[in-house]
Length: 469
Ligand code: ACM
Image (cartoon, rainbow, N blue to C red; front, side, top):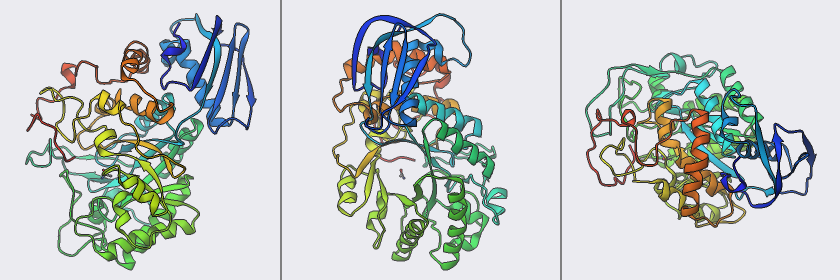
């Protein structure tokens, strides 16, 4: 039976008591509004369990804690052994940050609805509470919008994909695509809500929008025809044209998005806009202001801080740590997403077998040692990013995300003091068996399985590379 010292993320406080309680157990549910938001207290005695929570999220997190204590088998889809027990004791627990997020890029490489639901389950196991769903990009548009059928007919697929990094000529010759219907997205939102997870949708503007422009060329500059959904990776210089017509399109898109996603925060992107003019900035500010009139707040990446007349937003500080304080000083809230710490598409070792040589080298220990340098009421939390240019299957997403996302979960949930020497055996001996039971194809701690390597995409460099894509 796993002890309290196997829990991941590590709880705030534990008082072990003698004895065990058979599992599954009778759980008496109580509410105590005086507990911190999402917090819970578990009192486990030989005769049963009292679960006291501040709110529904606290109950969800407490159930995950109990599952961990009952042993890895409880993470399987069906019971394979009857006898389980949990140790007696008292756990008091609550999160360090209220935004504990993970971005999943379903635009570059589509993930099916079933795969997204499974990913939500995995977030819940780790007490993460935001799924930032990156729905649109140059390489694909993944949401149907009434009145704009070409978004699904044309923008939702590309004729082939680049193989490897952005400087290579190779293409795979394989059409790639997919999109979510409105009902699919309602289902994803409801499934996440049942697990106390908010889905923050992102429609990226004015860059990262070539798929939309391929469907409706009047949204783009006249310079480039014919348009097609991009088959390359990298940062495109083609931006949405900042015209009233584009704004009308975006209002229709976001009006639809708002009917699906109850999230108080809605992503509008704003990142990587080479050649952007003041008019592009105004488009972003107008869109953020429009969302404000609809009772929502826009989430934008830190490039938008260069834009005038922004309403209060949530800023994703990704390019460097200094963007955090800069955003707060400008009156925004901030989510810390630093590329050099929590971009999980980046490679995990500098071994030649490690797929694929993009981004910074970020080992599990590097990620775990990320210590947010800013704090305070406007720092909402921490978010990992799973960009998917080089993750073309759910198996590759598993490999990139796990176990590094376990480290991010602990940064976001547990008290600030951390010790990798304590984390590593807890992860290896107790948490990886949970991931095994869940069927997660994580990266083994000593390197990829042979079938997880990519000899077809040879490394161009064994040194850390400073740029993604
Ligand atoms: C980003 O990585 N372009 C936010």
